[in-house]
Image 1 (spheres, each protein chain N blue to C red):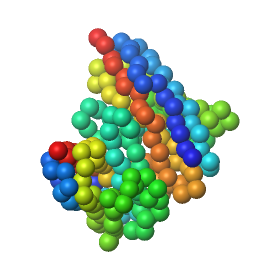
Image 2: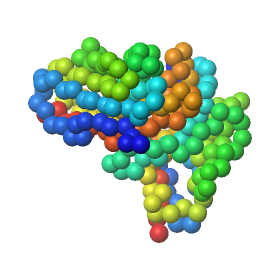
Image 3: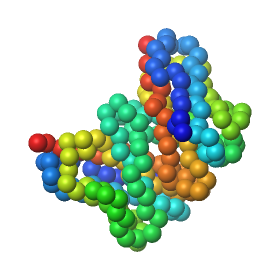
Image 4: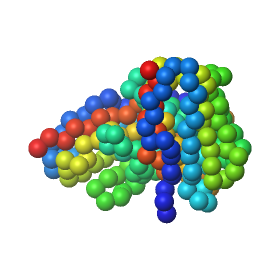
Length: 110
Length: 115
């Protein structure tokens, strides 16, 4: 089967850098994605890694190590609006389905 | 583009009643997903379709749940009979083939309360 683990909560201050880790288990691997969800809203796509290394998109970066079944999301220059839940998701398994982790609630404090 | 459109946005129903949730995916997207989100279980994949064909329905909780996609622009998720434990936010999402299904676009969700 497929499973993902990520911390349940992270707290940081405005302007800081925070890293949210994700480890996964899957038979077959087609990429690790990250989604952001504000309270009461829908998840929205942030980034995707299919190959090892770092992908940068503005203040957000995502890293993948396939040999370690590990990835992280790096948020820089934190802003209050970054307070949200962040989900890692892996696509794999026999039917290539997209499964989400349990989410990390990020609280950005002034 | 209008995005993924779901209806109803909110529904409160009594236990035992039939619930039908509707979804219109983004035009041109080949994949359609139904997810359920609760505090206890997080975001669970219920079923997904590719080109209107169900590919994986292993997440459908039990026979009370059924999903259909009669054409490329419409899908339904039906619960019959509904139970209080079905209370959750149900998200429909779609993605184009080119993204390999890793980039999916969610609708705003249908918030279901069964009393």
